[in-house]
Image (cartoon, rainbow, N blue to C red; front, top):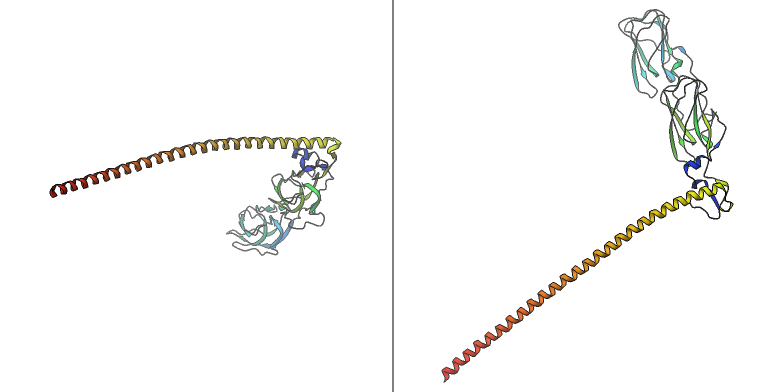
Amino acid sequence: SALAINGAVFFQHLTATHQATFQTVGTADENGISLSATALTVDDDRFHTAATVGANATMTLANTTNNVARQLVFNSVGNSSSAVFTISGTDANGSAITENLTALAAGTPKNSTLFYKTVTSITTGAVAATGNITVGTEAAGGLDLSIGGALAAAGTATNAAARNVTIKSSADDTGKTFTVTGTDKNGTALTETITGSDGTGTGIATGSEFFKTITSVKSSAFTSGSLAIGIGTAIQGGPVELAGSDIGSGSAEAALALLTLKSTVDTMNITAGNLYNKVSNIMSHMGSLDAGYQLDFASKMDVNFAGETTELAKGQILAQAGTAMLAQANAQGQGMLALLQT
């Protein structure tokens, strides 16, 4: 952008390092983007009512769909450690998943290792379960956070200025990542991946990118506790006019901007001078080549003219010689005729 000599120096004339010094600080809001997502509660009897399960049997399912993908928890009245339970269903993305669960001790719950959005069947193997079996959902499964389009009513998808994103977890989310998509202050698409916090309740993971709008937040794995997504304290401004930065004021901001601009112009002048020298050298070399070509061409033309002149002289000599010989032959014939007449 152009610098007005009699006007103000604008923010975009400064380098990125100097721009950072003009970032302002706002008030952090841990719920500034979406509602807090609370941990889910245990439901011990969500998929199956209490019943004795025999060998090679399919359990009766009371409810086969979760609001989010969650782990299943099995409870056995008797010792069913020899029984094998095969779970079939779908994950959070609708893909089919299956796993086998064994070693159900009496009175000790056991969780599935996979997370199920829907359950299509739970069957037993060749060994029957001992006593009643109940299957429910486990709170430790947490939730898969996915926000699309308009965000929750407690927050807003648009910040007053471009601000960084904060993620606060009540459980340990250090092994999980959260992908934030949106736009920056200029409306350009922006994506950032933020690593979760340790879940101490005070640990907050803060991103480094600045978002003007947020369109979605997606976690790489299921969180196991409450989650709050908000905005940080840093606000990225600009382009803005700097106070007291008129050229005539001699302010520090104006001096800094002019120094940066002068350095840029000097670099451009050096680059232009180098290019001019290169072009001049090439033009001089091309002139030398052209002069040599003209001289060579003239010499070739002179040699051809002399050759043609020689050929012409040769032809004329031969023609004259032929004429002389013909005259002599005619003269001899006339002499013989005159002799005979005599």
